[in-house]
Image (cartoon, rainbow, N blue to C red; front, side):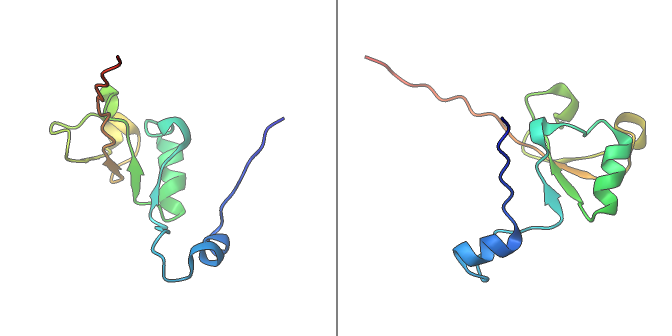
Length: 98
């Protein structure tokens, strides 16, 4: 059984109030950080108004020169030109267990 939960903007406004800034229609986090090397998928996101996507800096495909700067998609590498990839950095957490 697959349980899917979709939170809509109306539900968010009911839950947090209409002044709570929780919606950004131009940004998306794709499941599994997928589709960022797929030109038609990026084109479909662009056509839907998305301009920023979240990438995974631990994968070389989405790693910018500076880990704290984003990067732009290109036609040659991603199959689509002009989408901004926001880096998602993986942090190492050291825990002392005794």
